[in-house]
Length: 263
Ligand SMILES: Nc1ncnc2c1ncn2[C@@H]1O[C@H](COP(=O)(O)OP(=O)(O)OP(=O)(O)O)[C@@H](O)[C@H]1O
Image (tube, rainbow, N blue to C red; front, side):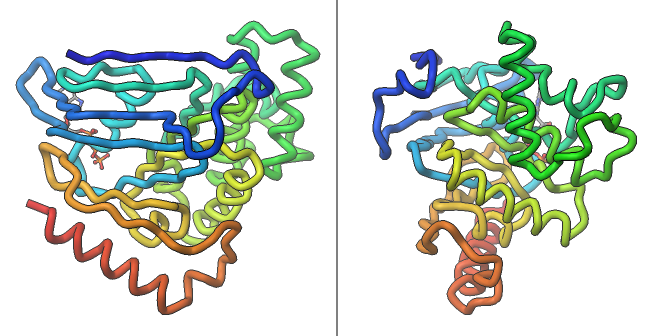
């Protein structure tokens, strides 16, 4: 049986939990789709406040499924899924902006759907737009933005909800290397500043190591966790750590585990 427990703090000020609290707790999660496909097998996963956890694994191993369960879009067929917040941000590989709305109006959308007043959502949207570096582009339509800028707008839209748990489904996978690295830097800055917990999916091992406090390696389908790596580099991180020997060593170890778990 799966269960979802939701405890919803009404505002940041009402949050009573402290750093180290578990926001997501999955035990023995199994996912079998109605057509018989088993996507996940016996997954134990926790994400604590202050953690940025990245999941890497071969294509089709169930990473997106895991995220969809975390978001409540999908329900596990077995195991327990305990999500201790309802302030969840979700960013997909596709920026999913409404083409007829300006950047500003897109960023306001979630706050609007959540019933925030026009003044309040305008304030939240402007703050988020400034945070992701899109100031000056408020009136642009999505088609007038680069791929990186669209992702920034998508991030800003989720930030208006002040997520405590931020889910990322390979958000930068379609971007060129330089844009991706720049957005990784921005995301780390936001993580340090906004103190959300992150659960991030990627195919890039170096992106995983650079962003995370912990990297989880999954096996091929049905996905199960084969290895977990704590990433020791302190936050905030400088982009230069990517060139350090310790960084390369960890990337090598994660890549090795990924190859070993690939069946
Ligand atoms: N609704 C569904 N019904 C049946 N099978 C599904 C459904 N959704 C996903 N699957 C299958 O479950 C498996 C895991 O899919 P999922 O998208 O979670 O993998 P992934 O690790 O995110 O893949 P990728 O890295 O390629 O994005 C795949 O074999 C997929 O075909």
